Length: 356
Image (cartoon, rainbow, N blue to C red; front, side, top):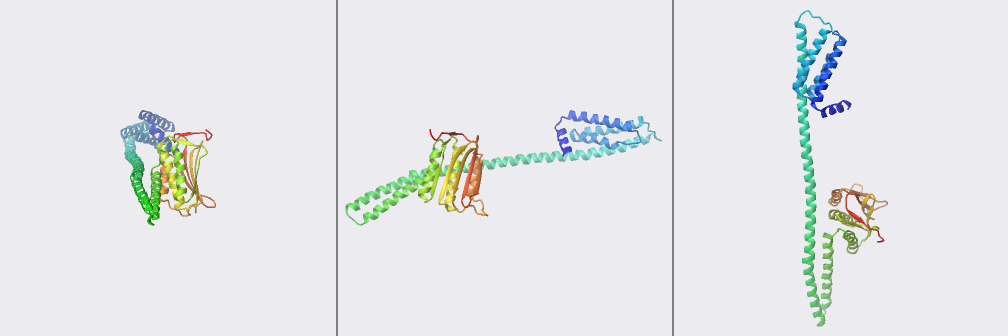
């Protein structure tokens, strides 16, 4: 690990620094070679500047360093008093040494080339993976955006078209009911009941439209939307859904408010349909840690071998989009708690004193 760290530090240095370092090492090893005499060899130490020259500078410089090492080694031995029976012996020894160094230079240059290619591939793959991840996040956000727009369109169609049509049917039914009542026909009561059913259908349609696309969620609209959600669930699904918020919060970012509302809506729906809860508490609390949205129910709880469904994955993804943490946990002795915590600084909100 220490050697790898040193190599990374040298790799970050300039080539000029590495060249000076290699030349300095040649001088140090040459001096050591001279001081030890020709009988003791320090040939292996000449590999250090050769390796550094090839790896951190270039193959050509490594070749030059190899030649210098052979020259310094041969000259050092001669100065130290080495005597040869023939002048060809030092030439032969130098040629063998140079050949060995050149083989090392060739091997290291190939390894360095492969290393550079591998690093380049890693960089390319990393860049491609980052681009793919960014594209995936963009597509997921686009899908959520399309879903929100489609829900808004359906909500407008329900409110502006279907509700108006049902209102016309109810008015026509009232007229017919009055006519039947005026003629004292027994069908008048049945017609009055039909009108009442149409009016109930109008209320139900408006409730569905508000659930698909609530009113403006920024400012005080967010608190009102959560309060309306609790009231709607209590009235429409016969479950006691309570909304608690001791310190009113006005969220100025529409995206944060929309995702938090959808998380609360999905959690409450799951508590009623899947956990069979009879009491649900939706709590919104702002503190130093951030904005916490918790949905607690008294249902059957989380199964031991639960599988994340589409609703759970969607809630978790919505939380990640706004930089929040999402947690689903079972309660003792039974029940489930869903928590979404938006850290302070990740949203724009105004906290008002409850007494004001």
